[in-house]
Image (cartoon, rainbow, N blue to C red; front, side, top):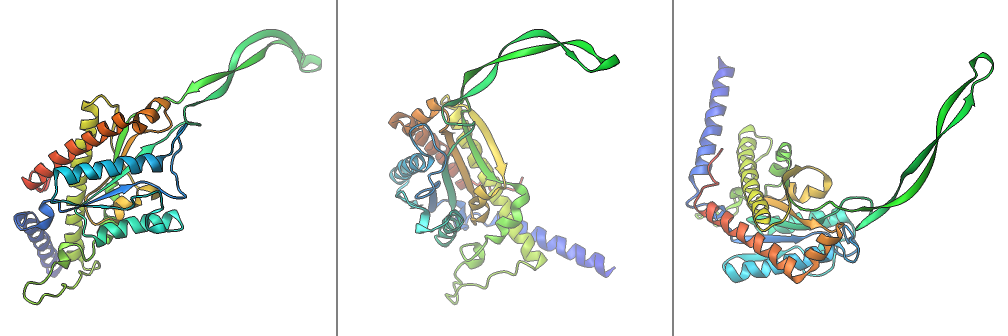
Length: 321
């Protein structure tokens, strides 16, 4: 009887927290976007994927800076923070892992409301294409195999080969969000910038952080993580729809949980990673390096961001599914 009572109490507590979370949108500073974190992928000693004449780090930086300027022009009230603005590993860190941690820490410490990482994709054996050895023809001939009573004549083939050029045809855009089964990692990223760290209006001091081992607090933080997942999915979907509407090949929204997407799990805010095209495809590499191509990519990102911001402020993506 006691266990049942405790279970009912826990359920009611979590339910109350859920409704209190979704019901405080009017005063919730996260119901709009005040600080946007833009993360140009790679940098410095880590050039990322290579194309036939360019690398991912340079293209990502160029598009990120143009995107940030477009945000500042249309939304002057939004503070834009870049994880890097030059060709360096963010924070001048010495390893990729340290760079990833710096990106996430910067976003969290800045109190970011949204994290957008810009990258380029790659596939195939080599950028542009490669030669592959294939069978050109085969000529039958007779040969004897076996010995004694097992001796027999069979048909065999003599092959000739040639090298054939294989075009690297992988193309299109993809937008990633963290895997839903990694919500615990997202919970662990909750820190002082979250609602738990709001300033106490009566004392002016930072409130004590929650204990993640407390089941009720863990449930509350999971609600935040689920909200972030929903918002990230909404923005990612809008971006891919914009790409598709302007003639790009959209490969859709995907979930990933590998080390390269660690920043999506370690940032305490909605977060996405946009692959703007395949740098390994010669045609797309030329497009994502061109002024025209980069401007179209920025326009698509801005259009999606505008719609996301409008939906967010109208609370249409604040309601639990």
